[in-house]
Amino acid sequence: MSRHADAPLWHTRREAFFYLLPVGVALALSVLFVVDAGLPDTPVDALDTVVSLVLIGLLWVRRRHPTALLAATLAVSALYLVLMTWGAGFFSPDLDFASPWVPLATPVIVYNAVLHAGPVVGTALAAALYLVAARPWEVSTDVILGAVTMVVLPALIGLYLRAHRTLVRALTDRAERAEREQHLLAERARADERVRLAEEMHDVVTHRVSLMVLHAGALGVTAPDERVRAAAEGLRAAGCEALDELRELVGVLRNHERADTDTDTDEPGEVDPGAVPDLSTLLAESASVGVPVELVREGNPALTSPAVGRTAYRVVQESLTNIRKHAPGAPTRVHVRYGGDRVRLTVRNDRATAPVDRGLSRTGSGAGLAGLRQRVELVGGTLTAGPRAGGGFEVDVVLPAYVPAGAER
Image (tube, rainbow, N blue to C red):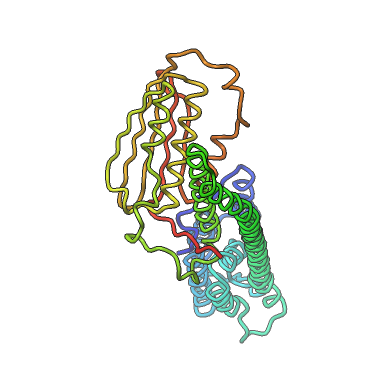
């Protein structure tokens, strides 16, 4: 059975027309032969007419059973040969010995078998059919030419079209593979450029922030005023935190390039819990300006990667900032679930309970959520955000629990 056994015989009207055309042509020729020669008056002629009509009818399913149909044609032609050779005088006194003894539908069957059954099986059966039709032991130019026309020529056409389709398929596959490789090369180039920009940003920003930290530390030591020393210490601590965050981000960017060679990365289960920022400070700040926040924590944050913890911290920070700008006084709920393989963070607020400060709401670039989404996707997470049906807004983030960070160079 062919690999097209379960496939539809045609998909469009045009395909149906060309598929059924050989059936109609063979049937018309058979009717013309019967009209021209008259009704069959011998057993062999009657058998030939019946077999020809049956094979023409089987052309309907020639694509689904090409090998079986060609094998049946070979068997019928061999039977013709036996009957014509040893029973010629009894069955038909007026045999046409100048033509091959094959059914009328033979060319279509041979072509279809070579095209769909394969070059080995189809060609072997076609060669056997040619030997039966050509009768090489009876040298006759007309018989050989008839056999070439009925068997060899359709087989050659089928082989050519099969080779052409194979070539087109191979070229198509090669073009698709080249397109995929080009896409991968472009992705690799973008990844390399991202790593280069991250390293350049790291070098430039680290230098400046380090200077700020050093100056703040010196000011905290030498300043005579206690308030100045406290402010300097706060500035120094903020600078150190910025350096840590920058190192984590650059480590994530380098992760794809250095995952196989970096031996200084933390392993899951060995994360310092103190490296994960605490959300309580953010909630206290929001509550102090009139935005009540409820925090619900589930699971153990100790196994969370620092990079993931900082990303969650930034999501909550940006979300609370947006709430203070656009929904002042709105009751807010922060729900954090720490799982074994992921962290889910939801920030949900209701309608504003205080007037919106137009001046404050106009500040910012308007790209806060877009920046958050990029940062979340950078560590392999997803972010969805949008208004709630009953009013308010919701930000839902799913993060992997662990993301390795490259060591600072």
